[in-house]
Length: 409
Image (cartoon, rainbow, N blue to C red):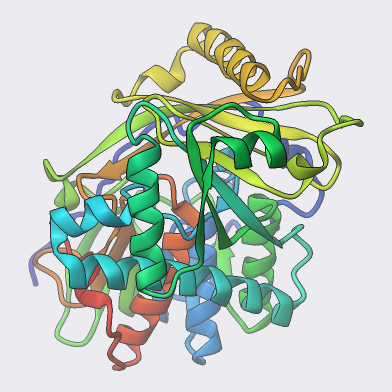
């Protein structure tokens, strides 16, 4: 039995104050002590990925231990703006050139299906997290112009994904925004991400799952019949399988030139009145680099973000948090005419992206019983749902028709 390090990146996962950490029911009470050392599955990470994984595994009847070196739902998850989009960061037409038409089409269709599956799950479990379906407006920008968006809309329509191309006149008449074109699509949603993750953890706990923090895993070894994990305190835990849902703080074994950690910024306004009616319903993002995205919540707050940088440490700079928030607010006003005033909340965070925009959902190299889900880009919650579906199926001995799309690259 060879022992391997189970060290993950250690990042400052966010600075500033996300709106979601100030909302009720956005975390769960974790135990501080381990009371047994054998489980069916140990899930490392108590954010949205770990919560979805724990819910899926306990639904299958498995005993689950969820560990985190932070408090539950206090890592990257509250930094999400929870625009739960079926649209992948890499457009369908471009993804076809990267990975082939069949793989690209299946990835986009699976993404749309996972949003619908998540909405259905939240409704069935009666999780109060402001989940609601929303259309998305994808605006022409300096990366993809109007002609490219028209081709993209047709490609989506051809595989059965609803997408309507809007020209400049359509945008001005319907949304009061001056852009050459856009795609209006359905099959996306929004939510309070912290309440969603905490609600899923509570469901898993009601089925017998145990959530313990702070616990840090430092080593792992594969046994003939399972996996042994060692903690920083020297405790040893054994399970049939382990799943690392540590997101951007990924295992050292997963380091690859195919993915990288970048930085992003976001803000939320005070509750506002008099907003354009369409802004209360539609989420918006643009085909630009850097790009702007925004939506509202149920209280009438405007939540906006973007200005991403291809560095992992920029998000830890307080000065940049202030300047980036001002840029985001100015861009929002220039596009929509909405002046949000002084933001009520500002925050920044690292996030990881892959070259093809698809996540990594796979066994850790060198292990048969250890899985990881990571590399989510701007589709964190959507891809977390796919990860929970695929990994729980593989642990149960079931096949998943799309598992091959997300292997380690």
